[in-house]
Each structure stands twice: as structure tokens, then as C-alpha cells.
Length: 251
Image 1 (cartoon, rainbow, N blue to C red):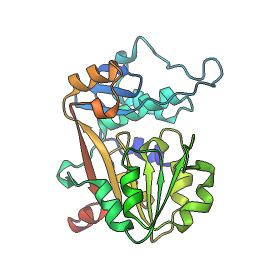
Image 2: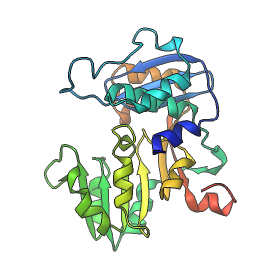
Image 3: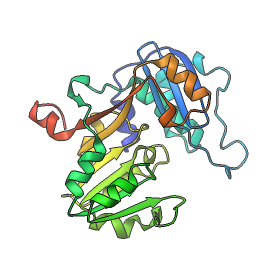
Image 4: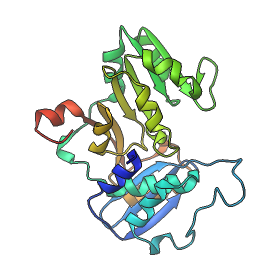
């Protein structure tokens, strides 16, 4: 089974969908049980039809679990919608979450070590100044960054690895996490990241994602083209493997 299979199989139930908003930067699915969000990915070069969202215009007639199945799709917008639905349903075990800053943990663990970050995040300059060595890998790399196809050379030598949650949407997560050393500290970070303990089964040590606490506000802002720094009604949360182990939970 794949990480996608395991994420979907671990969802605790279903819910009616109240609203779906596919914004320029964020997709939000609001359900009777709560809401979830994910980056809106698109492929400008996709062949006709491949980038479309099935059921457009009638998405709320489908259940959250039906929408979550779209995470399996190759089309990036459908997969983004599926990820948002997963995040609306996921059982994060809120008592195991903290408000700790994932960036602080990356810096603390990487201060005298090699760090690799997959994805372009606004905190990268801060990490670069604090750690011994930083490699940043991106699909479309900026100056000073590496293409993601360099992962096979970079990740086996990294002591701390942070992987963007969008890797679950574009189906690169499995290959990336397999390249990490068994003793590396591995994080999955970013608002798209599911707050699911399933990730710990794949060698992840820290999960940093987003909980939607005001679905109406999040839907409104996503629909009006808000970038993440403009989003309100959401809260960054962290789950740590060592805390769950200390409480006797599943890892």
C-alpha cells in the first residue's frame, strides 16, 4: 500500500460537504465535522481535460470521503481538492498536538549539521543563517536552490530533512522519504500537511500542518485569492512522534 492508501484508510468516517472553495492559492473543503485546506496545485501544461475538476458545480453533492478519494488523481487540482478533504476528516488526536514552532525545531537540530528542505518556504533565510549547511530543493529552483531531481544526491547526506506537505499531492513523498537516512530527523511541513499519525509509520518525526478553526472565514479568504500570510481562521499545529510515544500512542 502507498502513503495515499494508508491516509485514506485511516480516516475515521465521512461527513456531508457544506462548501468547497478552490482559490488561486488555497483549496478549502468545509464539512459538517470541520474543514481542511491544501495548496491549490495546477499544471499549466497539462493536456486538455487532465487539469479539470470532475463534478465541478456539484461538489457539495458528494461526501467528504468521496472528495478525499480525489487525492489519488494525477490531475493536480483534483489531488489538491482531495488533500483538503482529507484534512477536513483526519483524526489528529488534538490532545497530542502542540503550538511549538517547527522552524525552531529544524534550527535546533540542524545548528551544527546538514539540513535539506524540499519546498520554498519564507523562513529559509532564517534557517540558512542558523545551520551549518542548507540545501533547498524546488521543482522550479530560484538562485541558490537545487532542482528536486538532485534529491538522490542531497537527502542521503542530510541530518535534518524538511519535506513540503504538497509532496503528498504531487506523489513525490514516497520517493523522497526513502532517500532519508534512518537516523535523520524528518519533518513534513506546510499548511497542506495532514495532521495524521500515519506519517509516523513512514519514518517522519515531526508533522507541522494547519487546523482550520473558522471554516467560513477560511473559505472566504481562500476564495478571494489570499496567500497564507493573509489567511485567518487557521492555526498552525505540530505533532511529534516522541510525544506520542511518551503517551503510549501509535507510531
